Image (cartoon, rainbow, N blue to C red; front, side):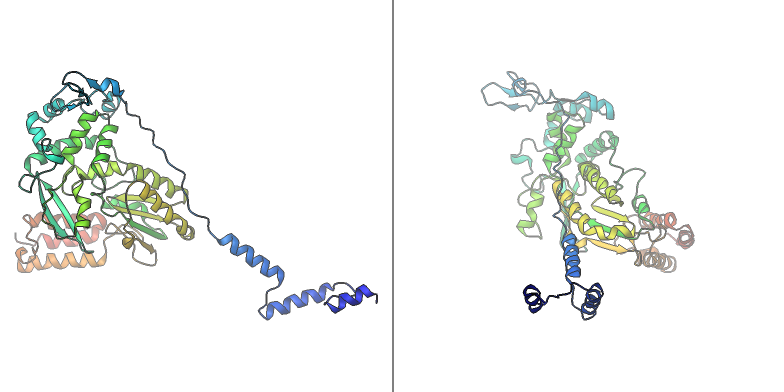
Length: 439
């Protein structure tokens, strides 16, 4: 044995070279005793490094407006172009915001060509002074001075989940104007295919049907959906349809609300602030259609994201629903943060307390419709309605109308029709009980 071999033997080496059988046996013994060999330790470290997820990021989205913009120099005119035109910075000047209407889009959607407040008043069939009164044009901040001066009835209702909801129901004259805006402008503009709330031909059933038979369902909820749609966004929506800036401003004032500063409220001042800026009022006939248009970009981006993850996506008002196969479940750790980033960038917020992931081993409900195997009504809802109908037939309908509904017969008939749409056999049973009621 040479000097070099002797020294290597002292430090654990071998003079006769490595024995592959002995090395393999030592590796098995170390593994059996719970010790990791260098090769195993290296593989575990590589696996842990691969398992670390990168930070979720989105490519910045830039919108390119297609509206025609009038040069500022042409907007300054020396004579008053129309009633209630805004004065310019210099004496004797006025700002004309009626020149940038885009007739191409108005004709494409079949909308009326309105450029000035006078055109809008003539289209609505009311005097221009009355139109200004409806928009609080002469009030400071374009808001009523008190509840009597307002064009809305303000009603606070308690939420089932806690907190309060502000219902702003328009008074008769403003309501008639909003109905005309709804039927002759907003109804002519199509919403995104993923939107199912408050649209003709779509319902909670069409919203639930795409998710039938899914391995899992992810439910998200937008917080304060209507109050989060502010006046500036509503102006932008009407501008995107082709209306001039002047008409878009007046249309936005007719369809948004700002309560008086002295409004009686059961909530704290910091909670009330979201309602004090001009926003979509919950209770106006135009609000659902405008809310759907304001969420168009959200629907586009979430539909694309869902498609990339092999998921399905639908939205009913503020309820977002995703569903897909079992292979997509591990990807939810990445998917949920991405949806939250998209929602935030579209100027909405998520109610994290209402987020749910429901597997197919549980009862899967989408907007009140069971979707495990087919669209159906839950047994609990069916039994409750059946008991109400039975008591109406036995003791009289007045004993069951606890909410004092003015047309309780139509209310119950509508609920029976809803069940029949989901489950014809159960609906027929309920209808037979309904027909025995003496109204």
